[in-house]
Each structure stands twice: as C-alpha cells, then as structure tokens.
Length: 265
Image 1: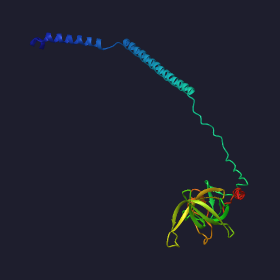
Image 2: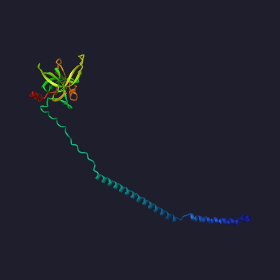
Image 3: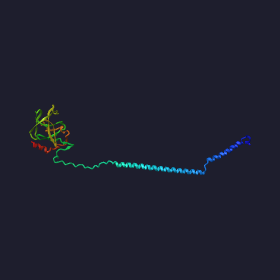
Image 4: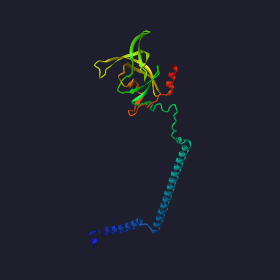
C-alpha cells in the first residue's frame, strides 16, 4: 500500500533484486574452494623445501671455498719455508780458562806488574848503566824530576854543545867514578829549607829498576847529606810504575844486566 500510494514500490523492488545478485557475486569471487586451498599449501611447501635445499647448497659451497683458500695459503707458506732456510746460530764450543803460564826461573823474582806497570816499593835497587853501579833508590811521588848524587860538577863545551863532568860515589866505599854527559836543560829547584832557588843541570841517564830499563832525565846535585844517593820522581813513575807503600825492594835486578856491565868493564 505504501509503495502504491507514494509510487516507490517498483524502484525498491529493483534495488532489492540488485543487492541480492551482488551479494551472490561477491561470495563467488572472495571465497576460495577447499580444493584450491590444499593445492596452494602444497605449492608453498614445495617452495619452502626448494629454498632450504638452495641454502644448504650455498653453505656447502662456502665451506668448500674456505677450505680451498686455507689449503692454498698453507701451500704457499710451506713453499716459502722450503725455499727460505731459517738462520741458524753457530754453536759456541765451551772454552776452559787457560792454565796460568809458569814463569821461567829468570822471570821469577824480577818485578811484579799490574796492567803493564812495574810495582815498586818505597825503596828499590837502582842500576846505573855506564859505570855499572847499583844504589838504593828512594821512590818519591812528590818530586817532579828524579835526582842523582853528583860531586865536582863542572860544565864545559864539546863540539859546540854544553856538557858536564861530574863524580858519582861508589856504593860502600869512599871512591868516586867520573862521568861526562851532554846537558839536556837547566832547572830551578825551590826547597823549603833554602831561601833561594837552586839551579841544577839536567842530564839523561840509562838505568834499570827490576827488569824495567829506561832512559830518563836526572838533576845533578850533592846529596851527601841525604840518606839515599838516588831519588826516583814522577818523570819516571808516570805511566810506568805503581808504588806499594807497604813494600821495600819489591823488584830484583836480573843477573844478565849486572853481569854484562861487569864484562864490559
């Protein structure tokens, strides 16, 4: 009655029909049959298995590549080690300390040495070459130049050079021996007991202490009032001798020196 009265009955019927038709068509395209859903699941399982297989194959290839790389690197290292020999340190044979050499009978009793220097005491036997006299010499590191007892000192000229003639005492006698030497130089010696400097001539003399022989400068002066005929100073001690103040006559003159001068005389 409503649709007939207002004239809307026919259009509403049409709309109802279209809605019914559209609902059926929507169910048809959105709904998947069960048979088709089973096939989809089977396809997904096959794809998953394929992916797993591919992943396993890739992992296996990666492991093989790592092993091959490691083996290649080791082969290169082995080849280098074979070609390049490792340096070897030479074997050092154990060496025993050499036995101390035995001194000959002539060397024993001569002079002890320390690093090449003769060890002397406060007093030593002094051999004066030429006249072949042996004195007891006093070792004095406080004196700069060595000194020899000389008497009757006379200067003279020989062949245009300055010379000196002097007498030296013979040990244990009242006799003297005359010597002549060319003057090396003159020095001034200041002594605490004297007011004025003492002018002395200096000559070169050959001597021996122990087995050490040398030519050195000596000042000539009267030492008759002193206890020893010869004084050994720093000009001889320097770089040659070491003093052991607790000793006397630490050296011994070899017989070959004294005998040779006796034969010459």
